[in-house]
Length: 327
Image (tube, rainbow, N blue to C red; front, side):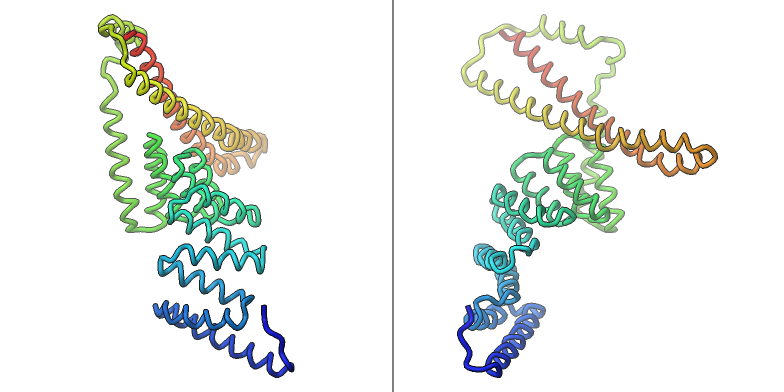
């Protein structure tokens, strides 16, 4: 807290001095003189421990110096002085991401987002945190919300594409890599990711059996069972089997949730919009033309998600068939 002042003039003089120090510290930060800025800002908080601007700048200076714990301490002071400062929560969440403390990041970011549901940076950082926790479906939802709020956020498109690659959804990954490049031409990481996603998609296509139209899945499964040698599974093999089944089940659950969300939030609304447009008489062609791109995008997303889900279910069925054949 500030000390007591003997008269108004003394108070005004000190406030003027603080303002001058704040400006000098700001100039130091702009010119890369972080240590000098910290020294000046420390002088300010020693005089006025409740100087909000000084704590904000100290947090930024410590963050730039990779002194993450100190940066968090000052952002927490900012929140104590003004709990409405949503950006302080978002910044704390971003720092926790840098530290690998993803659960702490999620908690801080949720607090910030509760104060401002339209904060694209908050949802972007939340996507990073969920990806760090390997909660990929949650990461997808967070990145999508960031993009909805700020459609041209190239970094969000890039990270969403990366998550789709991890989920095996190469078509959606390619789409968002391309958007990242559109919004930021020469975006090297997106260009590299696009090439890798296209190669992975092509490899997946090449892996499809050319006999798929001639031999049914039931026949292939039966043949696999007949040919598989019977043997007892070791304890380690049983553990590996349980781990594989659990991971596939988690993936299927996440993919099912994404598919359901797509149906409810994208495909159904776009179909309803088409139906309303078709009922508008003479204006229908124009309105249908406006609605069609959203429907096509929703349908593409739905088909990609359905394909991904079906592939995971087929993997689980194949795994169960193989294990049953072993035993």
